[in-house]
Image (cartoon, rainbow, N blue to C red; front, top):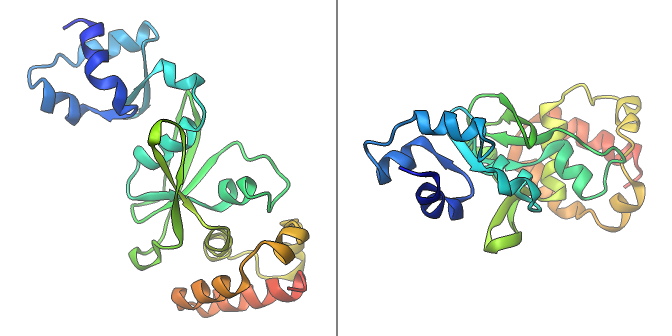
Length: 205
């Protein structure tokens, strides 16, 4: 099989895995992938998952691949908080939560980190539209904040919460406090309840 034929078939998938290739071509020679990666035609996203090098120059695909290479998952934590402007730092690692085990991957698009949560906590995310009629699974601001306080229990003092340097204008004007509390109840976690109350006190919400 030549690369042009392969690209014509697989390109629109953006991210594809080895099983999708075999479903199309059961006798596909896996050595082709190694050869095409060496030539710079393909990029390996993680073991068994690939994309075409053209996607490096397309907006949002760095985030899109976070959803695709480890599923089910949605973007949350520091990446989401930075996206909403709630924390001042530019985040280099792409952070997500998942019901799968905690994992991380590094590829040409960046570093991907996944934190494990229970299945009943996989809520509070929405589909954000991106290029090419695709969507991103992305935490709401309220859920991203709760995921952070839940998964990083050292945020348990006013000093630690102050060092998050959350944007006070955003918290006062844009954060949906009712939704924050509604989501917090769903966690059914007393330690998180305490941290949220401390957050409200620290930032005078």
